[in-house]
Image 1 (cartoon, rainbow, N blue to C red):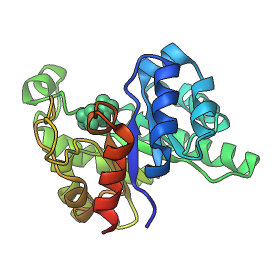
Image 2 (image 1 turned 180 degrees about the vertical axis):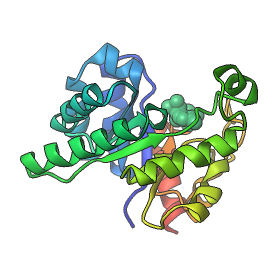
Image 3 (image 1 turned 120 degrees about the horizontal axis):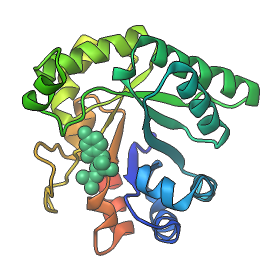
Length: 235
Ligand code: C5P
């Protein structure tokens, strides 16, 4: 079984991120670099993380005109990331341009095309937030609508919460990939995550990759925490 654990490196500096990555790399499949780390550490952090042998998920959630997003995606592919995110609300043309750019850039470099993952509705948004924006006000319905648009625009993967996973799996083609945060083992605090699944439940519900942050990086012994989670999935 491929190791589906993506450690969210929600840390402020490259030094902290690289130390943690080296410590846990034997027990995980990938590292997620978000806005804080990328902006503070710069693109070199990708190279440093790739040096551990793990994959990199660049979670910058691009949302712009199609041409701009296509160029940003091409730049990310050249950095050698294996997964990246865009906002589905950028629309069909933007998603098609992102996917085409990922494929063309990867082909020209003779590397595997990274997964361009669609972000549907941020879990921080509720009916009130959506009402203020106009349009669909039910978050679950808006998630489904954007997920179906992502599929018809050629995306091969989505970021989704544990709550959305089973519904999307039943609705979308079986080959879709799902990257799921909101994972807790039960041994640590839920923090600000409201609806969580444990790693085994999430895989059984159809997650392809699990994004796990604090249960690993805030653990007393991060390597041991990562090893325990990986062992729970393989035993
Ligand atoms: O520390 P924790 O395991 O909660 O980290 C989860 C990671 O997944 C964080 O980087 C968080 O920003 C991200 N995420 C999330 N929920 C979403 C989308 C992304 O927790 N709906």
